[in-house]
Every structure is written in structure tokens, then in C-alpha cells.
Figure 1 (cartoon, rainbow, N blue to C red):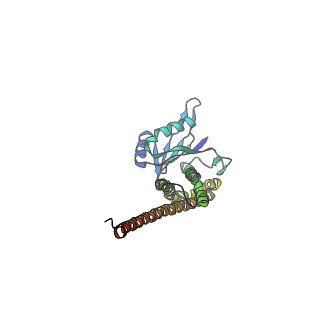
Figure 2 (cartoon, one colour):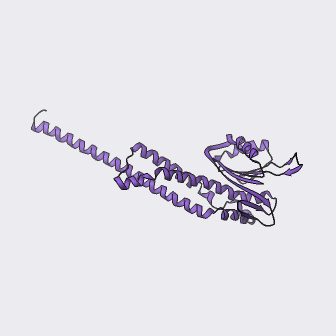
Figure 3 (cartoon, rainbow, N blue to C red):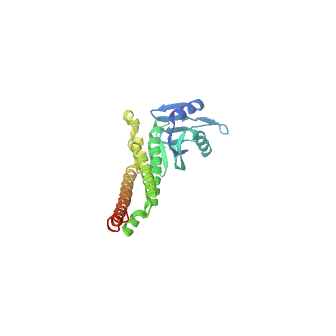
Amino acid sequence: MRCVAYCISTSFDLARLSSYLKSSYPLTRFREVLHISLDSPEHSTHEHREGDVFFFPFGTIVCWGLDEAKERQLLQEIHPYEQQHLEMIEDDVFYYTYGEAAKIEDDEITLPEKNVLTKLAFSHGLAQSVKLSVFEQTIQKTIHLTKELPELLALQGNIKLSRKDIRRMMGRLFIDRSSINLHQELLDTPEFFWKLSDLESYYELVAHYLDRERRVSVLNQRLRILQELFDMLAAELNHQHSSRLEWTIIVLIVIEVLLHVMTDILGYF
């Protein structure tokens, strides 16, 4: 069966989303995570088909046991409750089955039991990973767009950008950096496991498989690079401002000297 994690927006309007889901599906809330059940019998085979979906407040959903058509339908349904929809939806696709012990290898998850809380524990790790992928793509794109700036500074001694362009770039860097810093808590162990510590091993299993710690470390290194770029642009902006003030002062001095010459020496006034 399919298990897919999607990151589709920056966040959800949880109040409105909860109200909609409650009117359409059996809804359960686990702290800040919403869960709906889509269990139904398959009419063609008379077999029971399970379906569980978890909605995380940071714009991520994890679907268990749905087919692709139902997943797309659900994404369309919840679109009005997204905040800042992503242009490129990020997803991680897995398959799962049931067995004696929990494990994950070759993108196949083995669940030890048919329990919603067990799926939720796995889902926390999957949701964090797909959100981390969005952060990674954002930072990589920003670094790629600004990679020529240090080279220009090294070759020419300054950056051939207008003050307006520099301010725009600083604004972009600030938005990217702050959006990730505001979600840093998403990259730690969720508070959900403080009271349900017996489920934390499932979460850690996913975090280890998806290499969360190393990826967070790399992300923080890239954030430091963004900070250095931000500082460099700020220094260049200050340099341009200082240069403009210096030239303004020079021009005023020249005008003052000319007026002095014209008045005291040439006697024009």
C-alpha cells in the first residue's frame, strides 16, 4: 500500500481546515495534527481498504493507503485552506506493509500493528523530512542565484548592482533565512512524544533512515552562507551610501570654492 508525504504550502489555516474536515470525514485531533479516516470496503472485491491522512500545521500531509486519484482529489479539497501555496509541491513516496517488527528499508515501511498512533509516529518523521526538502530546495535556489556576487566582489572590488537591486536581494535573503529559522523547531523531536515516549522509537527509525541530523547540519551550514551573503550585501550598500555622501560633500566644497573665488577675487557679487 502507498504511503505518501506531501508538502503543499507554508502552513494551513487549521481552524478552517478542521471545520471543513469535520463536516466531511471522521476527524480526530492529536495536539496540532489533524487525522481523518477514509476506511471503506472495496466494492469490486468486498475487501476492506484502509485509509488514514494526517494534516500537519506546517503545510504537510501524510496519506496512508490511498491511491493516487484519491490523493489528488484530497489535495484539491484542502486547497482553499492553504496559506502560501508552493509552486512546486514536494513529495516522498513509500510503500508499507505489516509485519512483526517496525522497520524501513528500500523505501518500504513495515508497521508492527494496525494502530493510528503508530502511523502518526511514522508520519511525524515523514512530514519533517518532506518539509526539510522544501527548505533545502529554497536555500539551494537562493545560493545558486547569488553565487556570482562573491566572484564579482573578488574580481572587481565592488558589486555592479544598484541600491534598489541590492535591497531586493537582501529582502529575498532575509525572507528565505527567516522562514527557515521560524520553523527550526520542526527539525527537533516533536513534543508529541513527550507523553507517548513508547512511540518515539518509530519516529527515530524514520529520522535515521532519512538522515535527518546530517541534512539539518548541512541546512544550517547553508544558512550561515546566506548570513555571510546578507552581511556582504549590507556592507556593499553602506559602501555605496558612503561613496555617495563623499561625492556630495566634494561637490558642495567645489561649489563653495567657486562662489568664494567669484565673490572675493573676481568681484562678481
